[in-house]
Amino acid sequence: MAELETREIEYIVAVAEELHFGRAAERLAIAQPALSKAVARIERRLGVQLFARSSRQVALTPAGEALLRHGRYALDAVSSAVDHTRRAAGLGGGLRLVLKPGGDAGLLSAILARYAQEPDAERVEIIFSGPADRVDRLRAGQADVALLYAPFDDLEGLDHETLSIEERVAVLPADHQLATRSALRLADLEGETMPRWRDVPQGTRHAHQSGTGPEVTDIAQLYSLVAIGRTAAVLPRSLVAPAPQGVVCVPVLDAPESRIVIAWSPRDDRPLVPAFVAAALAVARR
Image (cartoon, rainbow, N blue to C red; front, side, top):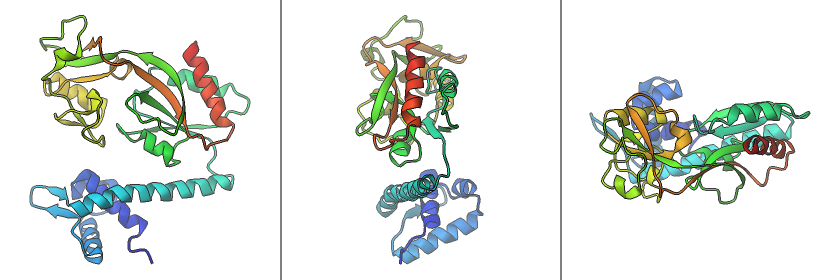
């Protein structure tokens, strides 16, 4: 008999990701006292403390970190099993495309229109992801194709084609001393505070993900923090174009180019996947 039910794993993951029982309860659509009691019951059953609680904060213990990591994998596996079962029975058809908001370099509408011209085109569901979970969704079978950024996203084990190559820019406050420059080099940005992207592990080698500054969950939040001088960033141009008032984007000449790629699992042999990829390539070439 399993010691944890799927719903209980969802409770633990929600609290671990939010580090706040109120926000986790709202996300799960249950009452906060019920969530607190459920988590305490799980801890008693397992014989471990998952969260260190105080009047001011909730923190993960080492046991909680382990359950968060493996719990995510367990939930992905359950979701993938259900999805593959439904698809094997002829249910849940169509194609699921995952991308980050604004992460299509303006290509998405044209790709969808081009694919819709195919005689066997099926419905395309658009899934907007967080900063770093697109590859995970693709590998877990929660998405069929993805728009990714190389070299930032891990493409190992995935089939992929390049759609666009673009420069990277420094995202700066409009009153920053470097904001009037026509171009920069990475050395010019040494000492600048860079953001920490939520759900992206620290220590990554890519400058746009490895900061020690404020935690950021999306581009809109980044804009707000940049405008008030709390952080700067180096990102692919298409993610930050056009920049809002109070924010300036300056090309970084020696930053590696960024590629927008369309990726899919080599195990997916359904004809709708290569048809969608062909439509995306046709739009990119045009």
